[in-house]
Length: 161
Image (cartoon, rainbow, N blue to C red; front, side, top):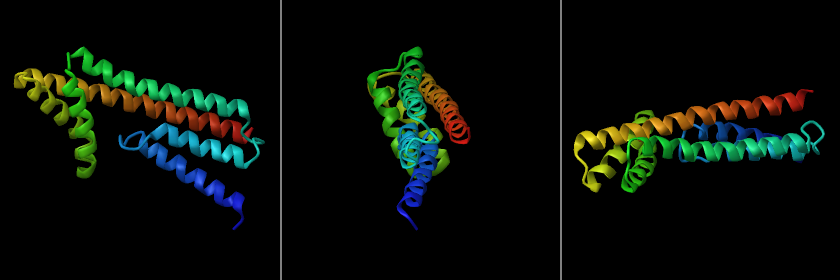
């Protein structure tokens, strides 16, 4: 196997891992997708995928980071989440990874709920904050998936045309 083939294989793995990372919060999804796409473009000497396309992909990656941050913050802020709820949702997300698909969905909610309870909120209010934070994370994930498919489409179009 030659080095170029190895680089293309690594690029493909990065893209697949990055797409998984748009759903699994512990992985930096779209930055990894971008790294794979950049590696493929670089390996091909920017012949199939040019520098302009790589710059557009980089901008979409930056947009994805902003979307992720803003969606979570807006979801939490809309329901009046405390800083402890935000920290709890992050901790819950990481812990949730160890409990499979159920943990991925329940972890951020439970973490935000516990954070609000520690903050001194009543259970009903804490549950509402947990749900709002979870909705923000879910919205961010859906938007990131949309951006991931836009990046894949742009990359495939540049590669094939």
